[in-house]
Length: 364
Image (cartoon, rainbow, N blue to C red):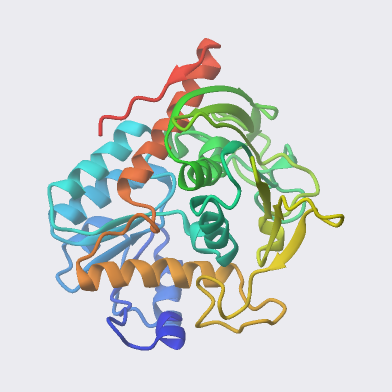
């Protein structure tokens, strides 16, 4: 309910109509805490609830396709977490269902809405950096508190199960990195990747002596060729000791470069070649009122924009599109973007298996 606090009531105010989850007790607690009208343990009951007009699918990838498809077939709009599906085929099912309905759909790549990212996009599109040559993008951490997934005794939760997650670090973290490459630089035409699983077995549950097999990647690296002629390198890992949430990229062009580090969310390092004696990277704190997406937040203050605000901007954009019947893209990540992203992931996984470059060939 943060959206009206920042943006007022125009054009729409979301109402928390219903919530759904596997654990009835926890769902009931959240229902009471946030004031939902109803709570369900079966997502199908939520979909057929006539008072639910928008479905925000925050479940694991295994329950993205069916609920999203049924929701759109019922005329409801959806925003779905990334990756859009366990596979590109599942993601395409969601995209295809949206194209056959009047529903609005968006994929949950919230990082696009950071003011520093919007400024980076503006600098690239306005050719301030000149011709873009290459991009390096990393998303690495340990996922949870403490040493996280580095701990071989961390239980075998759904992240490590390909039947639920689809893939591992490349999907959970790398999907963000791949979306950033696509968003900033355009279409990827070929990929080459390598993956590794370092902890191959984990306890079935906390304290268990029995172990189960890990069926996804811990670390994946990939090289990308873009239609523009630029090249990119992406790496993802949830085994990165010391990293809290290191989503980093650098873009290099003929006239300048930019660097971004999600652990310093409000900042963008910018270098524009000018030939002066003091030329070099400068750190721009992207919290001024004239910076993109900052007009409704606490400007020019330390911590004036945070992770929570990403979701406020993401969902505000989505609600505006639903209320006005407008397109989510190009600023917002469309369901087609989500499908292409899943196709990139699948292609990287295929490359790891074959040891070859794999062409990216979307159906649409």
